[in-house]
Image 1: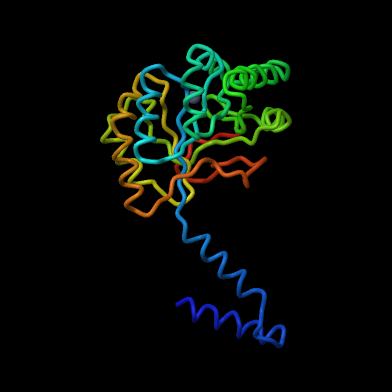
Image 2 (image 1 turned 90 degrees about the horizontal axis):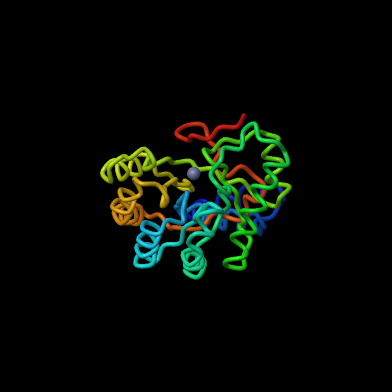
Amino acid sequence: MQKIARRTVNALCALIFGTTTCMLTNCVSNVSAATNVKKIYLTFDDGPDAVYTPLILDILHKEHVKATFFVLGYRSQQSPYIIRRIHNDGHEIGNHGFYHTYIAHKSKQWVERDISRTDAAIEAICGVKPKYFRPPGGILSESDGALVRKAGHPIAMWTLDTNDWKGKPASSIISIVKREARPNAIILMHDGVPSSRNTVQALPSVIRYLRSNGYTFAMLPEQYQGEYIGRKTDTTNYRLR
Ligand SMILES: [Zn+2]
C-alpha cells in the first residue's frame, strides 16, 4: 500500500517537476506515519482532592499514563503535597481558576488577578507556572480569552465530557468513552468532585479500553499554543460567548 502511494507521488512529481526524485515523497511518508498514531488526552479537573487525586495518580502510575490536571488555586494551597506529587509524577498541571468562580461578567482586573494568583499559588508549590488555562464551567468570552492568552496561557477546553461531574456511575462513564472516543479527543474527567469516586472506579477500564483500541495517552500538545484546544462541533460542551 505504501509502495503504491509512493509510486503515485513519484508519478505526480514526474508530471509536475519532470523528475521522480521528489521531496514530497518523504513529506507524505512522514505525515502518514504521524497520522497513524492515535493520541488521546486525559484531563482531570477541580482538584487536588486529598482522597481522589492520589487514587487517580496511583492508577496512572500503575498504567504508565500521563495526564493533565486542571487544579484550583485554593485547593492547591490546601494540599501542596499533592501538587508536588502530580508534578513529580510527570503530569501536566493547568490553571483552573482560584476558587472555580465563573469568570463571565467579571471585570478585566478580576480575571487577571484570578489567573495570576492561581499561577503564583502553583508555582510557589512546585516551581513551575501552569501552561494551560481551562475556564471554570468551560465558559469564556472572546475578550476574556484574550486576557488569558495575554497572561501566557493557551486555552484548553475538552471534546469528550464523561459527565462524571453529574454523578454518573462508572459504567456510564465507561460507555460514554467507548461511544465518543476519537483520535486527539480531550477527555474531561474530575478528580475534585464528590462523584470522583465513580471516576476512580471507571478509570482502569477506560485506560484498558482505549489502549486496546490503539490509543496512546499524552499530555496536551504544545503545538496548539494560543489556540482553543478542543473546539469542535459535536459532543463538546465548549461555549464561546
Ligand atoms: Zn471545573
